[in-house]
Image 1 (cartoon, helix red, strand yellow):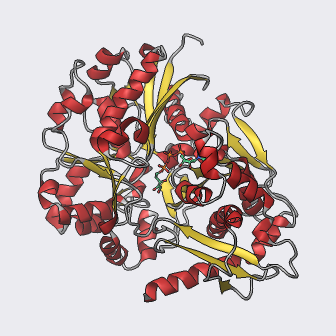
Image 2 (spheres, rainbow, N blue to C red):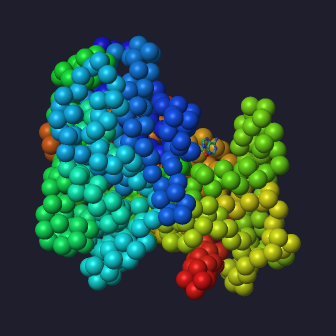
Image 3 (cartoon, protein in one colour):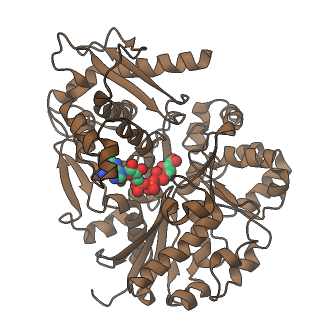
Length: 580
Ligand SMILES: Nc1ncnc2c1ncn2[C@@H]1O[C@H](COP(=O)(O)OP(=O)(O)O)[C@@H](O)[C@H]1O
Ligand SMILES: O=C(CO)[C@@H](O)[C@H](O)COP(=O)(O)O
């Protein structure tokens, strides 16, 4: 290890808090993590990091658990003898859309933190609400209907804010909490996103919201570069309320780099950070993921965390109600395109757990994914061995109500002709549906078909003679460790130059946060873009691994032929859901 400056990146996601320390040359020096279920499940009653109130569709996490986790992860870094005194900059990436409600005492309590007691004790009275809504929350249909109507249509809302109304977006969430808990709302001095909440702890004062993460609220006018007044009014119930809400939300920091202030005394005295250590703006976990490597045009990232997301960086702002556009976290004039699915890892885990063999593997400490992987690889694309006799299989495996399409929880299995997707039929009974061993391939294929369907307008042919598709597909998040998933995703999505896994696959957004901290502190000027900066220091070797061929002629086209049937299947399920 050299003795130069170090940088610290965090990822406060659904199931864990991770920390990663790197050098200026981007080498990783140390990491540590806290797993919410394992470390705090019994104390806070969380499962998979959250508490669920099924009756109302609410999903939330205790803010106190996050405070305890921050102290614990720093203890763990200290135990590993990480030289925290050399850390010069901190940034981070956090689950998006979640909100934290500060009380009127927050400013004083944050400013007066002392090193002798943990955060959770000292900040007991700093919150007007003990919970932060989680992105899986789906309690806000009523509010979403009003957001979609407010500017005239979901298309218009997407044009202004980058997204149509979504249950998890912070504007509808705030609107519902204001209605449901008016005293709590009145007692709230400031509202943070999870990213600005974590930055606030380091800063010792409430931090500004970040220019990219703010786009996950349905409140920020992206072309206008300001809060949308009509949407603030809707959320807060009128013009007076809008002015008050604007104050609660505070200024948004337009620059993703630089420092928002020095680290609080609490961290210098309790953990030995240098008083010169600076806090850079924290952002959302998806925006940070696109900072984990120098992304080129036509590259796509598939993040296989609790949620599945499909991300691209683009100079073109082409919003549509079925996906999201965010400001790029570091580069004005660039945008992040995102598709987000709730039914990612947890839905795949459910299919995995239904397989004979998984329970035994778990009990004996073997890889719980081995039965899933063998089954996925033993099944041919679409489970079609012979196109003249076999029907192609498609499915929707929604454990939770999905985001796109907005369909209730349930499992649907369909078949169609593999040659042109015609004759789509729902396989309704267990006798005509397929064996559980077929599900692993079909769930991953169907998740990928949804991504391919919705991203097709953003890709073009990477080289002469090839169909439109991404250049490279990068996999990150916990699921990126899985070779069978990598293979199937590449079969469906293509990737002219292959499918790659980031070597720190499960830590990509924490790493993106750490890279952001290096750039924020060491950029030559405000004009040096993140990609220029990172491109000069990032070395492909050792950072990524090719895990799949990507585009395979014939296979990619076979999925293309059933894409219209996939769309029709979603439409049919939506139609039935609407009429029941
Ligand atoms: N080998 C594997 N194969 C498939 N999925 C995996 C594997 N290892 C971990 N996962 C999945 O990764 C998920 C956690 O991913 P992670 O990126 O750490 O989540 P988050 O950032 O949302 O907390 C788990 O829900 C688990 O299903
Ligand atoms: O809601 C979204 C993005 O819109 C999610 O991607 C969250 O940002 C949570 O991510 P993970 O916990 O899966 O990392």
